Length: 413
Ligand SMILES: Cc1cc2nc3c(=O)[nH]c(=O)nc-3n(C[C@H](O)[C@H](O)[C@H](O)COP(=O)(O)O)c2cc1C
Image 1: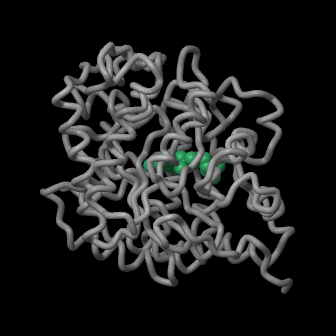
Image 2 (image 1 turned 135 degrees about the vertical axis):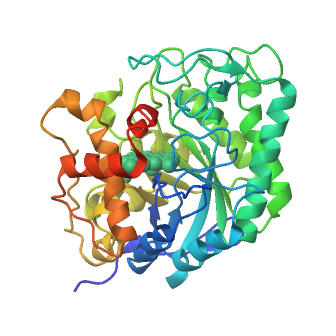
């Protein structure tokens, strides 16, 4: 076995905490919330498996801060009605081996399916532009008072997260959810202090950050997952994103994770589904080009997520200084020992294909991709290993049995 490489070197963040290596399990919505939206025991088992694989930092799937605003039917929610002991069980298992577990806090805004939210909220009353009619209702524009209530809910969820043993927080400001809607000039057409100029559009994320910081103190890490861009006409641009990242760093955020896209342009999982430059698509990781540009001025560490599939690609990204951490979602769902393998073998590769039934239309209608990936987490949650040859049809069937027919209407696009 060769010597461990730089992927194994630790990083200390501004808040003083150290992540033991460069591997980050990016957030993956698990659909393992129970009837009360508390974590099922399977979450503990799956996250313990990632900790055994030596990942330095695990970020939970998006945890909702408001139980009247869900992104998916089996989301976990953290609020005053949560059973905190179930969360403690999860955080204890997930943090073995010195692995960090951070809670990703989210509000879906208008990306809450119509069966879950009759009256979703958003910065402005602008519907999503999707070809799946009726799946998402036109949102209601938030009032100023409602905005402050939501900021309060974010900070309350963060306080609870700290109390139950999460070792940090990640604010989900990417992928077209509520905070990301505030950033976008297309989705945020307010003319008060929360809309208009970029300074106003980024006020919501900054206020959420400040409120959380006040609750958790200076020695507790807070990260933000930020879009490098929305990749839709009139949406959040790369230049704007860089300014927001700088403002977040100036405000005291510990770490920024770079991703991109929204339900309208799904760059986060496939750059071919978004109008991204060919030079960017040709890189192993989709957002390296952005990371390299922003790194020149940014004083805090970055996680780049999306596309990493080879140990060499990961090592190059760290050694060239393009990123400080390697964010991995699908590869870790198939190869939970990836960190150990990549640290010991530069030639290691982690093949990830989009699961398909062979029929594009069926894949889209039945959301095969999502069901298949979640099935991998559910296998891990049962103490089994992931199965690369798992049948896409079986994934859809199990998903159907688990969540019911409604799920197919309710789930994300
Ligand atoms: C099944 C699934 C669930 C996901 N859930 C979340 C989530 O809850 N929060 C989030 O920020 N990103 C989520 N993502 C996006 C991933 O974190 C990541 O940005 C994306 O998959 C690209 O990384 P990869 O190429 O390593 O998979 C999810 C992706 C998949 C495939």
